[in-house]
Image 1 (cartoon, rainbow, N blue to C red):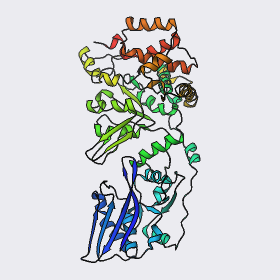
Image 2 (image 1 turned 90 degrees about the vertical axis):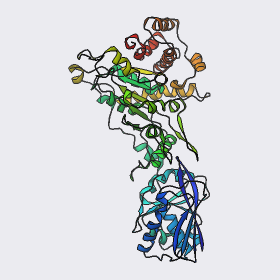
Image 3 (image 1 turned 120 degrees about the vertical axis):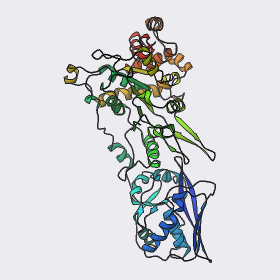
Image 4 (image 1 turned 60 degrees about the vertical axis):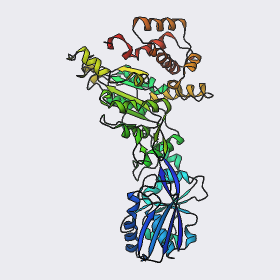
Length: 511
């Protein structure tokens, strides 16, 4: 007898429908799976056989052929265990075929028939949103994650016996119901706050400007000056994610298996801080079965690269496309997959190999050539995509013990949200999200400066040694500072502050 069960597989961050066809026929006993299965899918033969027997059902001693259609899509992961087991039970008339006619099943089976959690539950649920089949059978640990999609009905299943009893209508399982907006609004707290950072008022202001305009940021300072803590505080002052952004971010983490059973929706902006030994594939995504990298896991959040010059050159150069386009394309012989990657890049580095080139209290032992080689590890094209360069000085005793410490993240975030609202209204018809994404024509149109500010820009280029490429960066930063100040035209004060955020363009760093 032939049985057909609907399931799904995840390709990139999208779910594709898969029809699990199970044929039980005469002949020598055997069990085979076709349809481009990976090793995890092929190993389901042993798991399914043991689970059916240990749950008290009859396993046929006949020839079993399982086809995963369409056959041109690679199938990966153990999520086909449950539909294969149910298909065998339908084909051997232990379950009525009509019971599964309007249901989709996914789940990994243990040898005793219990259902283990799988990855990618949210993309699978989203794929059913516009489908006529909106009943989804999932492991209990994944049910809350999928239930945030209100258009479908998610049935939490704990084991194979319960699934069969439900399909036979011997027991009743109610679809899981969640209040998505309540979950989204309840979990927005961070462990750190900007008020926890001692001193560094100029750097805190720079972080506020970066958050207001979506500008990428580079912090330069000696060891122990607080660069990492400042970076960790940046998500606390970014505008709160909307529901669409939270679903998009959660989907990426779901595919990567980074959601615990208790998490349903990520309402906090992600903060990713990969080690400098990371490979370019792990950073941008890829592999034989392409998976999201760190830049996609930081989507709608912050990617923090500590000790920037220590990262591999090819890994850093791979950041150029996502920084420009907000996405990364991973191409393989069989497919090409696009992963979203809209993130704020925050990098930190020492000013020299020993770390004390700009420290007034400790002597630097590096030669000018060593400093030049150290800074040259960061290429010009990558540096062009970083708008703000901030010097982070070491703290003295007075700054370490001062009270009060400064504004909290909530107060700063309110100003950031007001500035973002101004930008959203200004660029509503042009598709630009923030000042950091302004194109040359938009800079000419929206970054109007006063005559005094023009003279200051001229002096900065000739006297301070600012490069020509820094000109547009200063104008974009000035636009953001003016938005924070709720001014339409940029004044001399706005341009002056913007110039102070371009320390790497000054002559002191050139050798």
